[in-house]
Image (tube, rainbow, N blue to C red; front, top):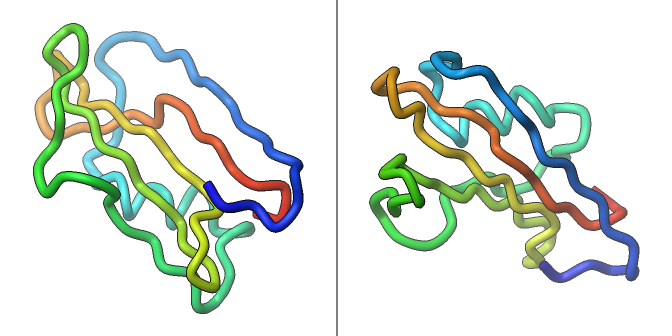
Length: 98
């Protein structure tokens, strides 16, 4: 991340098995962080084109928020193992200005 100041924030989430949203990671990020995403911010999948694989075989995706050419937030999603097509927000890290 490329923070304008040194402050950062984040969270880690814990879920029961079998839950998740059918919406993709980018759409979920736009909804869940709508009060923090500003006009002109780019919300996109970071890294590889396809999902990577987690420790237990679950799909992993990272979404980044780019503001004025700087990455100000990273959201980490994992695919639900027992519910295909569903994505869970696992954790996020963000600059203080996000």
